[in-house]
Image (cartoon, rainbow, N blue to C red; front, side):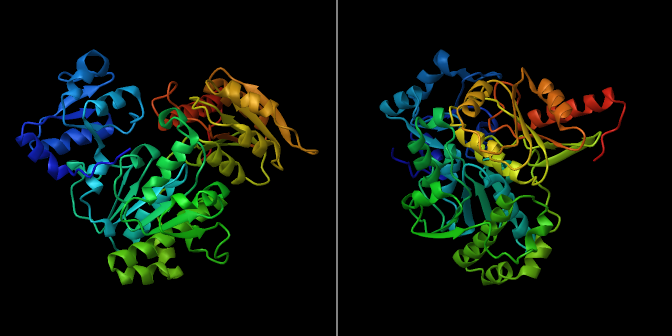
Length: 460
């Protein structure tokens, strides 16, 4: 699939020549796209699958026909370019692009870093941005979990741009900056991409378009190493066991070996960014443990990422709702060595393989009880049933629950008197909650209701 080299600055010229520009999808990114087009004096055709404002055409009721009459359609990341509607538009001669791709094609690439990966990219992006600011640079952290870098509401000139790239947006990118990072690789988003190998190809394409040079990658991932040919010209592998005496990342307050590796990836990125941008002072600062320790302090972890919610009657509740895949859920379990854990999993079913989750939980050295939620709960249960038990296992079983409230209640009953209730779903929240934060809020509220029922106050 050809990736257009169009830029935002090309669109006014096209409309002056009589061409139409469409915006397909009016979510967060779509609204930023509309604001950007207004600054360019471009009046777009607006289309959304479920419009809730006047002037927006429904995709299935005239919207697709309107987009077919456009020269360029800027789609929201959630719309797959492999879907029938997108293929129909391309067959009609329409150029389909993404807002991030339009921005990247005219950005100062030496001051940009892409951070991608199945999981860990949000935390790593946030850490890179925090360290840059702590080292005296201005930085915008945007993309998948942050703001759109082209949004006029975020206008400003920054020293560096840290862009989290999802597999959805990676498929829109025609260029790669000199420095990229890959935090992990595991099957995900299969309905959007069509199959697992296309997912891997799309995800890692962020590192290998024209302009690519150095990719800082997770060296602990055998899956990623086996696909190193899909990475850029040079690869620096980073393992969580690298530099074992380094403690500068302690100030970040991020638990788990996977987060140690994320911090080491961030450090390598800073060195690469400084070299690419000719900022030798940044290279020197990134090599200085004491300076990095100062920069790391004050970091605020992302919400719903191994976030302690409270303790009720000796049981600690941990919100890890942002973990929507098997890898981060297993990493979350590893963050609590020596503790018995009631693990709440399940959500939207994206067709991923849950056998590695079952194997990881069954192989855990401490008692673990699993509470499975719809819609993926039955498949998770089947994966556990099909997985052979170790000779000695601490697996306490798996229980289907109709909703999160029931799961929290059952988990609390099992985890008493001093265990952990961990919401780490290994699945998205769509279809049950607005987003991962809404799911995390519901988890915290359920804990609060337990505390009220017991006439105790949750401890922080």
